[in-house]
Amino acid sequence: VMKMDISSYSLEDLLLAAIKSEVDARAIYNQLADKVNNAFLSDKLRFIADEEKKHREFLESVYKMNMQKEPVLPEISPVPLPEINIGSSMTPPSEVVFQSMKGEEAASDFYRSLSERFEDDETKKMLIYLSEMEIGHFKLLELEKVKLDREEEYEIQWDMMHVGP
Image (cartoon, rainbow, N blue to C red; front, side, top):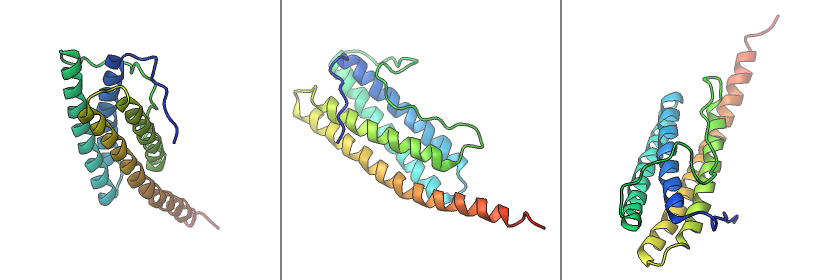
């Protein structure tokens, strides 16, 4: 397991980055859910989006408790976490899912590392739990990616059947 080195960041920046990444991830999953034409996958993406919203709410409460103020999200994340890019309408959903998998993996490492910055057991445990949930999302996305790859390959081959003499 790779571990992110976050020692040079302030707790405030780390929490803002975490909240921002949950907000961004949720937006991506909702956009992707609208884009895919597979109802099952769409439902799974919306399910993950809803979980990201709960993560954001938890992280905001940790922020308020530690910083004694409301979080104001930066335009650009203070901590470099992988960017997920929906791309154009030509970007295959499998590519966005793959980027999302990398994002979930990074988020998992990030929360595990962040948990070490807290003394209180409850916050520590909750961050480890978030880390494990992100791995759950990674595995769910991984299964969907295999199916998408197969569908996209089939569509390409199927299209080619109409080309010919």
